[in-house]
Length: 309
Ligand SMILES: [Zn+2]
Image (cartoon, rainbow, N blue to C red; front, side, top):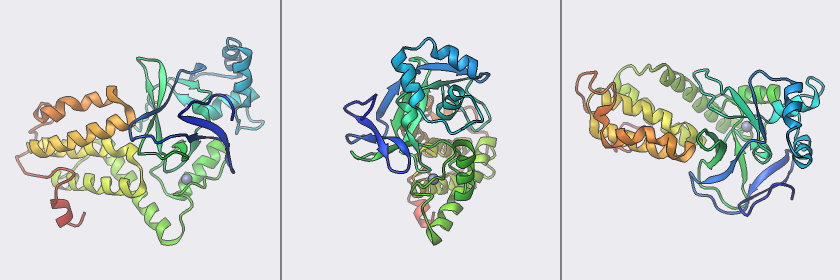
């Protein structure tokens, strides 16, 4: 056991992966497993000199811990910069619209989370408190390894592995990447389909409201089957938008409620706040009643079973 350990989790050697973080107790979905202030941060314009400059402000013990972290860059970068680039986590939001966090930080504990294409932990920057919060994406049992998702998760196994190998220098052997035969074909198909639906969501392209809400239900099913709850609130937004647009406020309210719960679990109360008003009053949404009145359905409606979703 090495620095830092708590009663909740500990850092240890994980076969085939170097160091990793193991849960010492049960964590409920949405619970904070770790909240950590950065050892130091760097802007997106950085180099070995700026990393060494920041390190000079740290204690000798902190410097020692920093140099114990792994670098996957070999001789491509000087050592300090290589370690920084391998372990940096965003202090802000990197979103799928191409917005990149302007600051990245080193977190001596957080850097020890390994990757999984089925992550059970999500990291989200809490700007008000100046700390990175790691939350359980689902219920986690004592003894499970805690993993983040480093790269694109909505992609086929071959694409995910190629990206992880190029950026981080390892061949992913997570449970999704270890699938074979029909199970792998089905997983690849679901993730590819989710990627297409996610990019339609980002473009705000919903098409026919009934089809839009049906796609959101299908996406939730695929996310459940792929165990990827981190995207749940995004697809609930699509369902909410479609229902609110046709003035089906009862269904819109249940989509908003589901989005609120999913957002709170993955990103915390501050982030989930966005949904509070819409749960209470979906007609306050800017695109509410922008299309002709129709009755659709919420995420848990029995209609979807009847239709075979
Ligand atoms: Zn994987």
